[in-house]
Amino acid sequence: MEEKNKILAVDDNLVNLAVIEELLESQYDLKTVATGLDAIEMARQFRPDLILLDIMLPDIDGYEVCQKIRNSSLLRDTRIIMVSAKAMISEQRRGYQVGADDYLTKPFDGEELLEKVCDHLRPKTVKTLQQNE
Amino acid sequence: MGRKTVIANNRWSWTKTNAFRDMVAIGVIIFETFVLMELLELGKSLNQMAQRETWPIDKFITVPTVIALAITLYAFSRLKERTCELQEAKKMAEIANKAKTDFLSNISHELRTPVHGILSFSGFGIKKHATAQSDKILDYFRKIRHSGETLLMLINDLLDLAKLESGKVTFEFRPADLAVLIDSTVDECNSLASEKNLTVRCKYPETHEKIVLDSHKIEQVIRNLLSNAIKFSPEGGTIDINMLSKADSVVVSVRDQGEGIPQSELANVFGKFYQASKTKTGAGGTGLGLAICQEIINAHKGRIWAENNPDIGANFLFEIPLSLEVSIQEEVLIGSVG
Image (cartoon, rainbow over all chains, first blue to last red):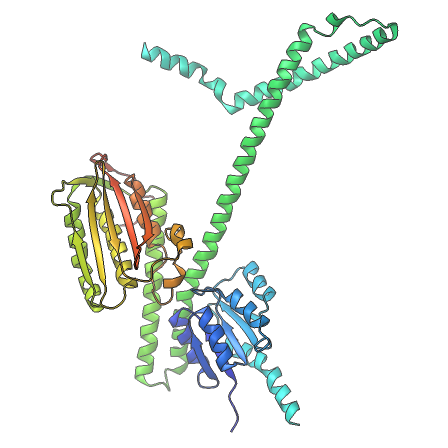
């Protein structure tokens, strides 16, 4: 049986998390958390392939979570897509500066999220296939 | 006599305007140019005298040079003053501009969040209406409604705040019994409090007189502080509302048993879109409630602040002076409909 890719979604807004669940739950192994510190803890345990990371979080913000993940030897290669309602260019630039692989602005189209997730998970799939060969 | 003084003051008040002072400064600079030419002439004759090795001191201290020096000093001090004023004004404009940009960025973020919920779940409904079960579709509708309510709350709070900040709200200052206002607000919030098994205790001074305030607006403040206290209280906790009469003011405090506010964030909680980090998750609200409270209390010439209790929880207090006079401050609501 094919193993599902693991995705961790981080958002303090429950409706936003529900949107992501609706879109991804059936195809991926999905976990959700609502705070920055929980995100880091869960990432260590769950070892996701991809993290969907909101910026405005109640304890530490998404930028800091991203930096901590990039500084962790265990998690540094995890793909990170920032998903935020912060839409200004400067905010997006900061996301890339702290190590995000991609940036998606809310409100987003469901198809757009699915495409991005698929794009970012593909390299891993290819890598795994090569290793298996 | 008094009237004459006023007229005299008015007559000369134009000399105190910046425009007049600037005109004087420009005049001085023109005059200075002439004086400088004079000084060059003087320099030439000094040179000639130096060659002749005679140094008559009276050639230096002449009426034009003394006047020129005095005027130069005045012009320089005035120039320095104006530069400082302009630098200060520039700094203030930059701060205001930064605040505006931050506000727009925040507001865009806050509006996008519920809109995202509405668009996403309505999209799911459109896509899956033929195949999804009815309880799934019902769940989508509930989420759309919840996001819509959040959006409406945000828009209402924003309009309230904008009106208060621009002074376009009518305040009706009339004598009222603050204890009665507190009691009725507590009654109103009773069902919310009982959902979490909370006890709300009110304590008033044994004798208290009516004080001049705007009842509806002060009720709004108490309702806001109480609903925050309910939101952040643990299940089964107690909320204490105390009213304290002072010589020239009255203080109301709303104390909860929640997690309290981090010390570094106490001063910021009245800012727009601010929600204390410890309590933000799942607490809902627009982050504008306390900013609205502050505007209302400011209009009462009072103050509002937050403290942490020594043991547990936060304490929100406001103070209203007893010196307010009965009045209706009517303002025309520009753009208001119905």
